[in-house]
Image (cartoon, rainbow, N blue to C red; front, side, top):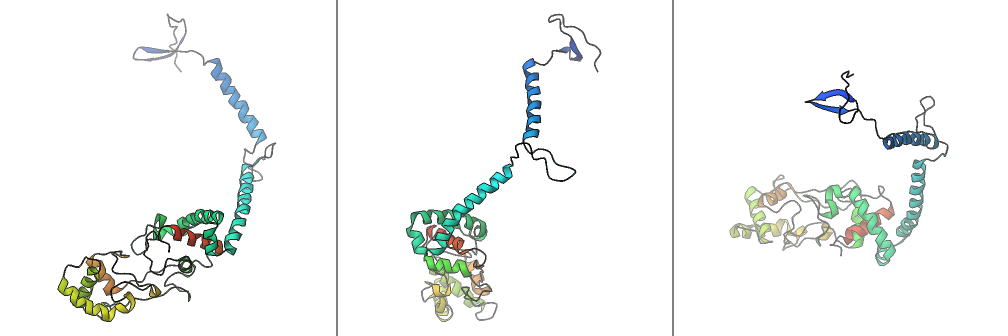
Length: 291
C-alpha cells in the first residue's frame, strides 16, 4: 500500500501515493451513478437467481428451478415438436404423391426443394460436391450428362438402390481391366487412348487413333457405342462429349483402360425415408440437368 499520500495543491485532493515519472493520480471516489449501477446489477442478479433456473444442485443433482419455473430448453423442445408436426403433414403428402405430382404442386415442390437441399448437404455433398458440382470419380449433377438417366424415375432408382454395391437391386456394370488382365498390350492401350481422345478433338496421333478405332470397335463399342456415344442401360459414359469423370488427360485415359473404373454409390433405401428420397430426387432433378 502506498504511504506517500499528499494533497494536490491545485484541487486540494489527496493522491493515491503512487508516482510515475513525476505524474501522480488523484484519489477521487467513483462517481455515484457508477456505484448505483453496480448495486443495481447485484440486485438484478439476485432477483434472476430467485426467479429463473440458475444454480446447480450439488447435493441432489439438477439445478434450482426458480420461482417462475421457466425453462427455455422446454420451450425450444415444444417449438421443435410443433414444427415437426407441421412438417409431418407435408412429409405425408410427399410420401403419398408421385414425383410428377410433386413437380406439379407449387407447395409440395417448394417444400421438396428446401428439404432436398438439406438432405443433399447432409448425405450427398461429401462425394458430389456442394450443389452437385462433382468431384473426381463422382459425377457432376448440374449438367445434362447422365450415366444412368436423368429422368425423375431414373434419379429416384439410383438414389434408392445405388450403384455397384452389395444390393441385388443396385445398378451394375463392370468395365474389363484391359491392361491388368492382359486383354490388350501397352501399344494397343495407347492406340485406344488416342482414339478415345480423338472423339472429343484431343487426339494427337492420327495413325495411332486409326489403329485404336479398330480395337475400340472390337473391345469397347458393345458398351460405349461405335462412336463412343455411351449406353445408359449399362452406365457406360459418353466418350465423345469431353466430359471426364476421372480426368481427360492421356495418362488418365490410359489408366482407365488399363485398370478399369469401379465407382460405388450406396443405396439410400432403408437409410432415408420415402419422403426424403423423393425430396432428394426432385432437388437433384432441379439442379439443372434433369430430363
